[in-house]
Length: 184
Image 1: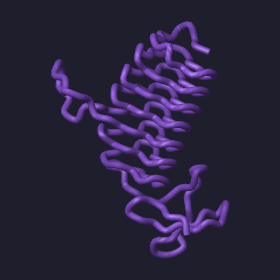
Image 2: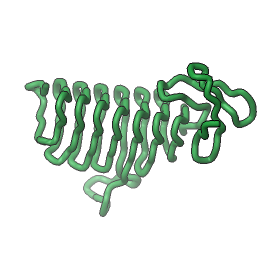
Image 3: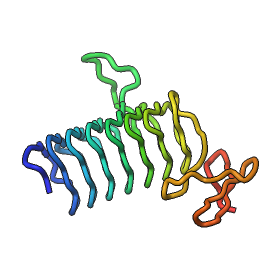
């Protein structure tokens, strides 16, 4: 379903995707199946959105943004794609930002260019992401700082000792590493 008040120029929208009021989606954008694109969303040309992605109201996806499947983008999340913006001065290429499968970005968070957010990571509301985020990491603040780990459902893992964390739902134990969590 595409709401009649939206300006959707692309034909690359998957089955079951809903586009609500007052959205603008440019011609070369690619959007997967069963997505929910809320009102007042702008999507540029060089944007790829996977399947089952939710984009809440007031989000702009600029050239160079790639959202994998099952990503949640909260209201008014701000992506940037130019690390040195100036009026009427365009870079040779825009920064690339990748949000990996299942990651969640809280309301009003800001994502700087050339960032990768790992699978199932959780970005707290209002956070400013200035560097890559590990899979399953929970980050908050300005700049965003790592404060813990979450499972695939976004529930915070419990620290059992120095570098070990437990999923209370499954009982699984993980060890924290420089690449994320390792199941023990």
